[in-house]
Image (cartoon, rainbow, N blue to C red):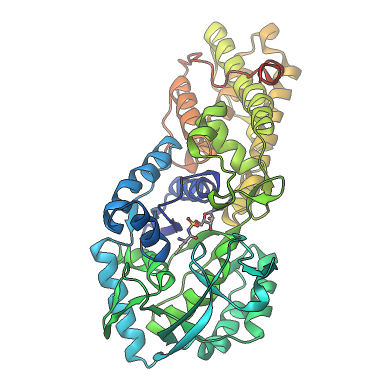
Length: 491
Ligand code: MSP
């Protein structure tokens, strides 16, 4: 039986411009999905938008639109951005999709019937930008105002009747979950923080609102609408309720940013345990892209949107930079200059040169099939292990170490002098392996290489099958170097 693999991204608030932060998670999910396709698995890759909640309602009203009209206009921006970045998801879920709303209602009813939801009074500080409550100790005080620690915006004091989810009841089961499943929270360094906070105790969670309308009505009390995070988190599950998709649950990995780790590693498993549903295997939280160490986001006024990102040096260079420049899991400071440097030094000089030199020499001299000894230098098992552990940057390091080996091999064997067709075959067959391994990261480039070298990218097994084609063509230049000096003196 073919193994399944299910990867998700957070569903984004559609009133933001798709920027480098959203692109980062979605791109990582695309890389992980493509990698698992290469492993021969049946992959389901889900992304989408989080469309209910006060924030959307407020913005729509300011613009004189209904929330639904407003969100409908925004969705194409996300779809276009993912297309531009060559991201191939299997479903784009919207929390306004009917099948999703139906599942959320069923889940609310299930949790209610279990006795895990009760009516109470809520009073607390709320940040609309986060769609989250804060206790006073977590807020920043500035000029007599209380500000949200993430958005640095003033919070509101909300008082309302609200239904509560008995989160406190799940403290022990959550701690057991983290204990028994060391991979539930990745990277490992984030586990301790969550475990400590859960140990400090959990308060019941307000999961309904009456102060606005834009959301899913509670099935047992239609005067309340469902808290946006309960609604949103269930997207991962509702996308698998179609009979053809049921096999994909539980998710293999929810990729998220570290800002929303609490929602995904505490609320989400608690909701699922309450509803009697199997738990996802891993929640992986990556770091933030920053400018001068401040998180990039629209509400702080400094963003790099997807169009800008792609316009610097092309799609594959943007994809490569985001995955390579910083360890997956850590923060990274964004700079256009370092993107161009990676484009020039690694993609153009190392990969691009290798491919065009080898193709050029083969066009002139031909190849002769032989055993590819060079392939022994490829750390394939390490690469597989790193990809399995979501060490995406480290896997790229190993692939590039092999590119270096190939470049050194040319220098050492000098096939332009010796015209050694066997050496050229080894290089061509190694380039095949490189193109396959890089396909999840830079698919367009890998496909161009594959075309020139006469093979199709299907799976990792192909690496061990010798290249059959001998009619190799020097195709177009893969990466044109960008003159950094000229660029920055012109500005
Ligand atoms: N709608 C919620 C998620 C619900 S998931 C059930 C939400 N949306 S969001 O539009 O604010 O997107 C949050 C996600 O975008 C983060 O978790 C992260 O994946 C990504 N990023 C947004 N800004 C980021 C950076 N500056 N750097 C890296 N990623 C960040 O929260």
